[in-house]
Length: 109
Image (cartoon, rainbow, N blue to C red):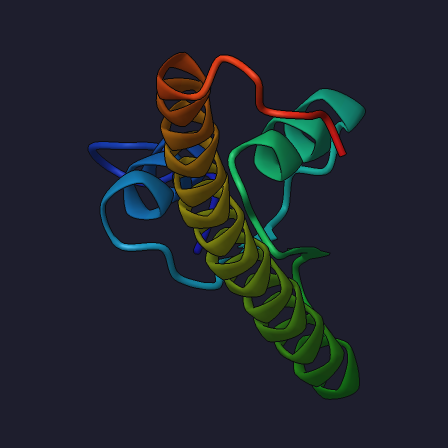
């Protein structure tokens, strides 16, 4: 994706894509200011290349973007599993508190 596009710039488009349908994005542009690179990174862009790219650089950027995307999806999966486990543990703790109310002489372990 390029930075300069007719209706939406590439960084804004990358943000929309990441919000609605997370996908690996590679920016390919003539613009390479530190501010643009930082904004692209914050938008979830997986790689950033300056035009014209060499074929090998493009292959590497796509590989890195796909790997970064895979890592992010795995982190999301692990976070979901952790949130589920936390919910289960909270329910168990609530049940223990309820049982303590019925058993006034429950000894601590």
